[in-house]
Amino acid sequence: MVKLHDSYKRLLQIYTLSSNIIGTPRVASRFVSAPQNRHEIRFKTSGVGERALQERQRQHMARGLPKQKPIAGVKEVLVVASGKGGVGKSTTAVNLALGLMANDQSKSVGLLDADVYGPSIPKLMNLKGNPELTDKNLMRPLVNFGIPCMSMGFLVEEVAPIVWRGLMVMSAIEKLIRQVDWGNLDYLVIDMPPGTGDVQLSITQNIPIAGAVIVSTPQDIALLDARRGAEMFRKVNVPVLGLVQNMSVFQCPKCNHQTHIFGSDGAKELAQTLGVEMLGDIPLHLNIRETSDKGQPVVVSSPDSPEAEAYRRVAAAVVRRLHLLTYSSCYL
Image 1: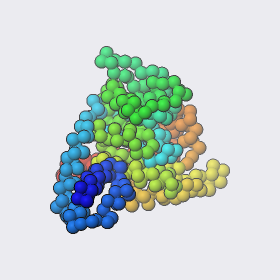
Image 2 (image 1 turned 120 degrees about the horizontal axis):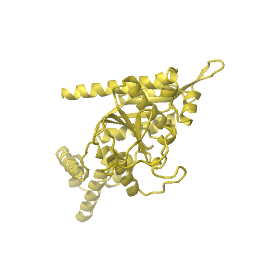
Image 3 (image 1 turned 180 degrees about the vertical axis):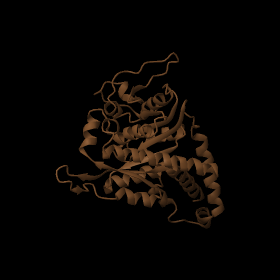
Image 4 (image 1 turned 90 degrees about the vertical axis):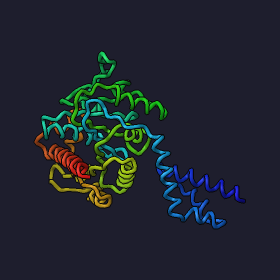
């Protein structure tokens, strides 16, 4: 019986260690719901023992994590993420990058498409072709609108499906980050894939990230996944700069009546719940869709439009949040 209890304790330690990464499994409760002796009760309730176990877990995880290494020539890395696909994340990432440069012409901005399975940057930025190699065997980003871009879409045929397992994807991400001649950039905006999987963990664990921007529609089902995305970044110690509420309102072009197709203020309420800033609202507008499909993002093709102004306000809010984080860290 004692050996059996010891085995349960070892299993509990394994499940507890795993929960730091993937959440606490429900099955683990079976091993603590009905303790059989006073030793097991003490293992569950002792504060000193629990702290010692947590410290051992922290040390164990620290040994297994890769050390973060900055990208050569890049000052700050921003990731644009969403828990769910189809919420306009890539369109937001493109116009955020262009908005950062439009707000301050002295800043240099790059764009990395980390969505290996569904690269959108080539279409959105109207770029085709294969990257050239430098003398150091580094890929040169393709450039449009003054933004150097790198994407898996430049390395495969436009309609070719990428059917890869996790390790191959991780290797591709490493090459897109490390084997590219980014030059000198003030900001590198990374368009992350949807969800909270291998790519997100690989990027956040390998490079220092200045902050994450979470994109969501006001719809409840999208907000659930957006919250998961925000919580993931907090778990890996990446500052969440705030939320962008995309497709917030539709205005009829004939009568100017406004309709909240996906609901109203859902992302604002989530931002309050998470204690992060609401970076801005982007309307559901035909101009954004048409300019994106043409590879002429609205910030550069219709700079005087309300839609372009909305993206520039988001970019300004991102920079303001970065400055606040930098200022506060100097006094910690």
